[in-house]
Length: 119
Image (cartoon, rainbow, N blue to C red):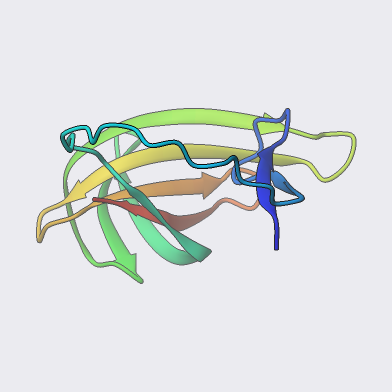
């Protein structure tokens, strides 16, 4: 148990824990709710097969199934070559049956995963 600390790295989901010491609560006026987007991470990520056309995902099969109605990406990141190398390519995809998901391809193993759902 503790409070998460972000680490100085681009590695996805990297963090450390520190002692939990919440600040004393001050009374503040309530603010109106604002719309927000949540990224619900699957742990562990779910393996999928992805069909590509012109380098973009068009169909997903596995933990999720469906045609890709729209996509954004890729966003590429890599690092830690001196320790345990990682390299990935991320896509946000909207599926035709509904739902928006974060996919990534492990570029070292050439495997695809669904990492999260966007709400």
